[in-house]
Image (cartoon, rainbow, N blue to C red):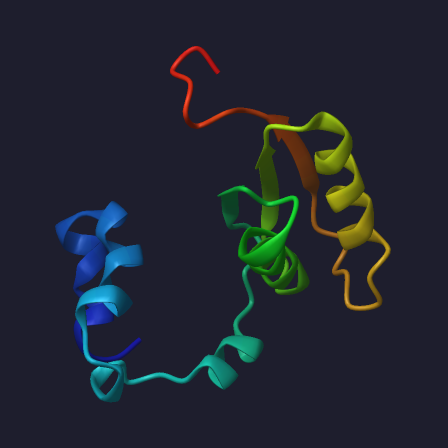
Length: 109
């Protein structure tokens, strides 16, 4: 890890996801192509809205890198379909894929 990324976990782990949003792209010091070399085995990810769109793509990519992914979705049928789609992908690493029914707009959920 280079630049600010090696210091962020020392400040607070939850800040890691904010760094690209507040840092100009030319100062990221990494490329998305380098992400393909990252081994995420042993890491856990909770992705909300993971049954379609960007959430599904992120869940799929993290799973391909070996992370255990939990897909947070409102619709149970679509959530299970998304899990199955990731598991049947040719690049699937065998990492755990877990559906989780949740509605982030509801505190009860």
